Image (cartoon, rainbow, N blue to C red; front, top):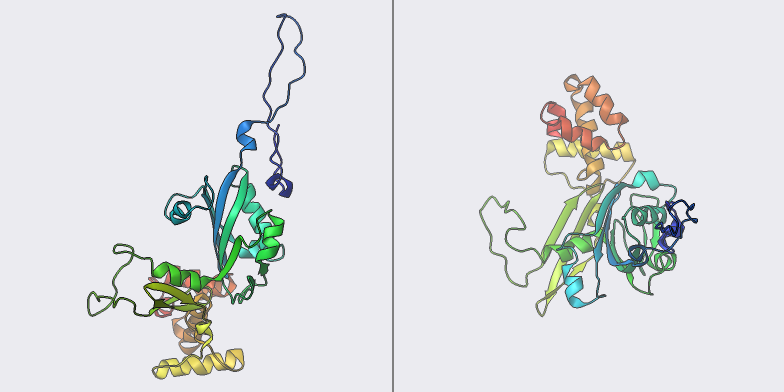
Length: 306
C-alpha cells in the first residue's frame, strides 16, 4: 500500500501492509490480505533540524538524536553524517513560502521524523525568533513552525546567518581552513575579537567577542554600509551605481552575487568593444547572472575583470 506524500504523512505515518494467507487447504482461495502497521514505520526518527537559509538557496540537514537532546548528541550535530540533507532553490517556493519547503524536505527524508529541536540560520535580522528576509519575500516565525510541525515550545531557534557563521568560525581547528595572509601564517591572539565576512546573494558580516574564554557572535547588517571607492575606476563605478539605483550605494551592491553582475554591467558600458554579445545576453537573461560571469571568467576578459 503506497502512502502518498502529503502534509498529513508528517503527523501520521502511512500504513504499510504485509500479506499473510491462511492456506489451510492448498486449493482454497486466500482470504483478503491482512493489513498491519510495520514496526519500522511506527518508529519515528528523533532528529534535530539544521538549516542555512540564504537569499537564493535553502540548505537543510537532519541529525538523529536517538537518546534525546543530550549534550553528547548535540555535540555530534554537524560532525556526524546527517540522516538526510538537501538543497532547494528558494525561487521554487517564492509564493508557497518556507513552511511548504520544509514539508517537502521532511516528506523526502525517507523515514517519518519527529523534530526534537531546530536551528535555522536566516539571511536577515532576527527579532523575537522571527525574520523578514532582506533579499527574499519570506517571513518565518519560530513559534508558528513549532505549531505546524508538532514541536515543543521554544525548541526552534532562528539566528542571523552570519551570527551562525561567527559561532562556526570560533570552533574551527587547524586543518579546517586555509591561510591566505600574504605575510605567512599568523598566530591568533587568544581571546581576541574575530571578524567574519562572506559574499553570497548579499554581503554578510559578523564579529565575535570573548568573555571568560567563551565567544559570543553578534548580528550585523554591515553589508549595507556605504561603498567607499579606493581608486579612479571604483570612483567611476560608484557614480554608475548611484545613477542606476538613484541614490546611496551600499557595499553589498558591489561585493555579492548581485554585485558581480553590477560590476560586469559597469565594465561593459565602460568598454563596449570588449563585450561578447552572446555572453552578455546570457548574463542579463539569467536569474543568477553571477554564475554566468563566474563560468566565463577564464575565457571572457570582462567577466574575468568583474
